[in-house]
Length: 348
Image 1: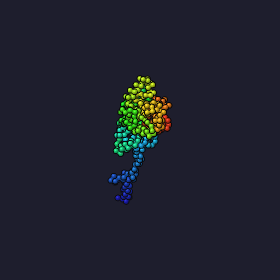
Image 2 (image 1 turned 180 degrees about the horizontal axis):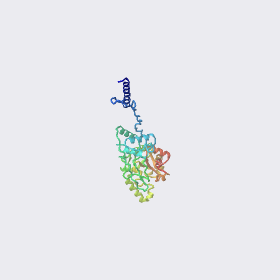
Image 3 (image 1 turned 90 degrees about the horizontal axis):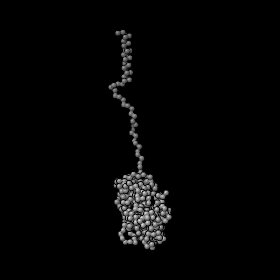
């Protein structure tokens, strides 16, 4: 072989080697380990943002009732929702909040159901919280209310237990409502018979005992004449008065059944020997009547049917008719010289 031919062969071999190397760079070595793909994960996993902390549910201090407003009321509403209720947390002690408090009270032992958030109710609610318990909303006081009462324009009260329940010709008590915490206050009566009209609800009875004790210290002779009156008893009395005077006239001084405050157990008619133990407007002229006008509110009572407010209350002036509403409401009503209807915003 000539030197020229050998040179050509070596050149062609070098060219083939170069082409094979280029092809290997493009396709890769099938026996080589593949390089790991570049990781897109961060070097350290990001931690989720912590949930914002919420304030623990607390039971507010006692001393709240219907018409109150503010953060303490909102705290109470939140506490009620935490144990089983579903009411607006609007900071207004409205009808629905009063209902929830009353319903809770009715489900506890030895707790007065007045719809007022007092110290006893606070203690009971804290006990429910500490035990991790809940209540069944409506088990004590269902929210379904009959459509109407005796009169065509009368509606039934949702909460007859309410200390501030407005009972009048527009709002009536259910026929089957009977207070469960009735007692006979330790005060003077002008009769000795053990009659239902001696009774009052326990909270009102205790307040009336204090009122009578203060009147006695002032040298006055107060006597209790008529307290609790059942629906059936009121039905009998109103029918009798209507027969004697006509229904329209009778309804100026006597209530139709269901529309009498006496059925609430929060009312007591009082009198004195000076008017021969009668229920008469002359009682207002006695020392006892004058003292009551000035001091009834100090014990949580109001003169329910004041003079000059007949168009609002629907009844004649009755200086003997005491209604328990609690000291807070009684003081406000007395200071402003208004009726319970006006205090509760039920007058247009």
